[in-house]
Length: 112
Image 1 (tube, one colour):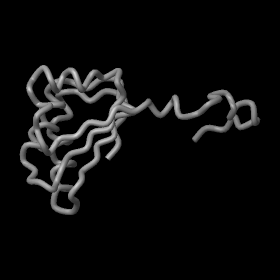
Image 2: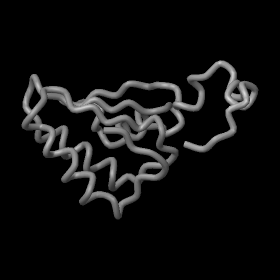
Image 3: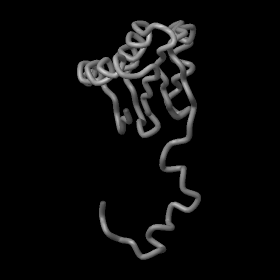
């Protein structure tokens, strides 16, 4: 599951419903937050609650940019010790392209 923009406290219910359904079908639930520039602590707490609910070998894998400071935030709450929660620091999607202007240089001005 990939999320973008801001993940606010008001999104907690929808986030919980979307993610909990996945625990029945897979051992590794991946949440991609690389397109997120803000996540509320209450939304992060929902992800932590889900990770606490999982039983090994199941795990919640969170991909996020270092700009969200998730590693520090998880550590501050003691959540970094949860065995079923893994965090991977990644670059945001916008930095994946070596030349961000290459689309316009190629003459592609259409919208998606």
